[in-house]
Image (cartoon, rainbow, N blue to C red; front, side):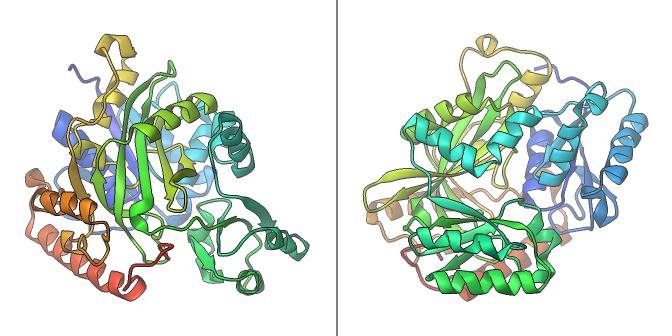
Length: 414
């Protein structure tokens, strides 16, 4: 495939951002410009990225971010910068100023109204209901308005709560706000609301009923939709073990890459109804009581574990380039789908064990794939002694923190 002259620009410096850079490098041999708030192990000492450090507030302030977009376009006049990454605030600001940026940038994002729908829990719950699909019952509360807190009385415990705006967890971490907080009782939830509000947190929260089931009942669905509205890549993976550190909870650490036809069919209908464009990531969880899949989140971005698709034979980089050059799905013949099973792991594969995988048939499959598990940070074209030491140290930390935060398998995953 002829590759247009592009400059991949990733905002962020964690394993997800490096994964994008690796995918582009191994596919097209190009380097990625990483815009980071600070240096981190995944991108440090790398030959496939150029890192540019910016003040932390740049990711949140249009007055700082927009000039940076123009500066990058001016610096590379012969290349088309492509916006990539998982930073919600950056993506939201870029979309709000699409008319200003798009003549020079390629933005694999939906229109503002579509993003607003995808990010609106109430609207998405209604859409899912209309399609005949399930989503957890939820309410919206405002920590700055205690009169809204009683809405949780109508929810069955246990409960989980998360910020309405994903970026709030990072910006307001000093208030005790968690990415995802779980509660066995309504009183525990109210105490959490009071603690965060007393520390200055006035943000909105989504509180929903917790669907039971351990990590292996969770699935991820990722892919790409071109500007014509055609799904050009879509695949699924079953979570074997999630990351249970408080600031990363909800992210998959080990994924069994395999096709789930039911979820692909439902996801296709959901994505079409929403009208999404560009990268997408969805999360679903099977309720072990009746095997109903519940749709948890629809994110209009590439997703933290995006590289698991490459393990299964789907290349999101080629889907992106196809869209940039206007290649229709018919030109390729069919959408990219999984070609093989595999194991994706950003955690040491030793954690994929019988301690966390109870089902004997599932364990048999996982065990057979462990030898060839893929770590996106372990890239043969990007070797460096310090990168190897970082991966070893990161792996040790993953084991230690998993034992700290999730020492035993639970019926809820919390």
